[in-house]
Length: 321
Picture 1 (cartoon, rainbow, N blue to C red):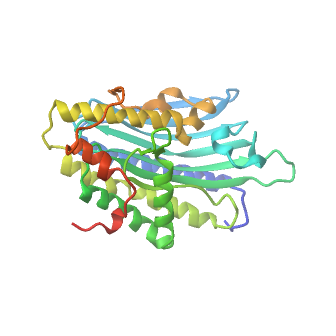
Picture 2 (cartoon, helix red, strand yellow):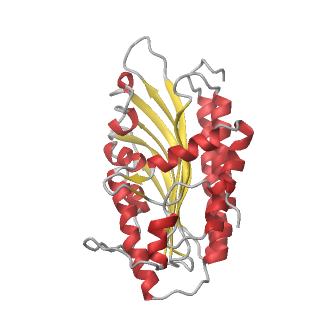
Picture 3 (cartoon, helix red, strand yellow):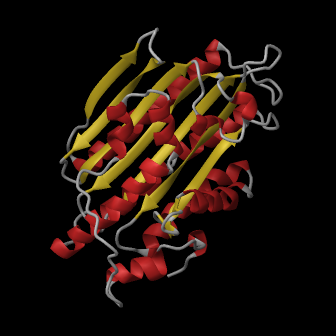
């Protein structure tokens, strides 16, 4: 497909769908190998006539050996009105018909020393209301890491894997998408990062200046790099001993995850605003969470280090022991 053509034909849609379904399968196979417990499968369909039509496949684990709760969703949906979360900054797309497809993942491990992680890769097509306007497509996504106790080598590995995945497409992508991730996953009401970031991008291809094949290949490279970025960290931290103190802090920090997803996350807001499947959308929520009034960690503790030193934008890809 040329850089100026914005129309996605039936074969292209089928190719996208095949990739996203295959990615979900490969990720689940890798996560099942880490956990030793099978993920359940919940396939669903939204028939014509409903606010949102299409189908999807939710893969979920609860009370596994490694993962307390987590899931990996595939969805392929169509709707008559593009929600505000997806049309923000694009007045010409307000109220447009749309088609969206992708994979979204969140994993919440049992062990507080094993970080939570998130991945999303997606493609949108919007059909503006203007009779002479061509459809507009774009890709988005990324992956990020949310540790409860900081290990520099884990953060460096995660970021270097992201950097390597983007390198074939241009040296400018990793620093741009890394900065975008740092800015996006910020709890603005607390002026506090959710985690140590990774990469995040959106609207890739929407302005018509990039070739479809380039954008799709870049998105695939991010999705394909996920297991290499996350699995070694799980293997290194899954068996570390922990007590009630660490577990309590993990549950407290999970509250930040909930706050971000319900207040700021564009994927969550898109799903809820478009009339998506609530169980699949809220799969990202951790199973146990705590909030405390104005709690502050004691100075010099590992919990204090997370706040004072670890949770800030850093050049993780250049970190050296």
